[in-house]
Image 1 (cartoon, rainbow, N blue to C red):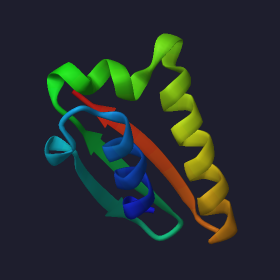
Image 2 (image 1 turned 180 degrees about the horizontal axis):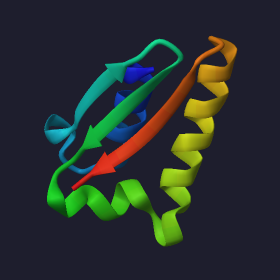
Image 3 (image 1 turned 45 degrees about the vertical axis):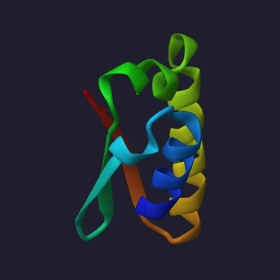
Image 4 (image 1 turned 135 degrees about the vertical axis):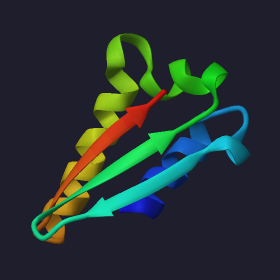
Length: 76
């Protein structure tokens, strides 16, 4: 899951070296925290949150296949 989000985020931003993804794993669910450079935050979120919503949808589909629940947090 972590690698999936990292791959998508690196493709979107101008400075892919500043992408930092951490995963907090629980029994039934995991929280994935995404940090990007301040100037790339708008690119990850997108207009009206469309890009972030799309990333969350892909993450949800992938986590359902693994029978887990995953939540994406974009941290400023």
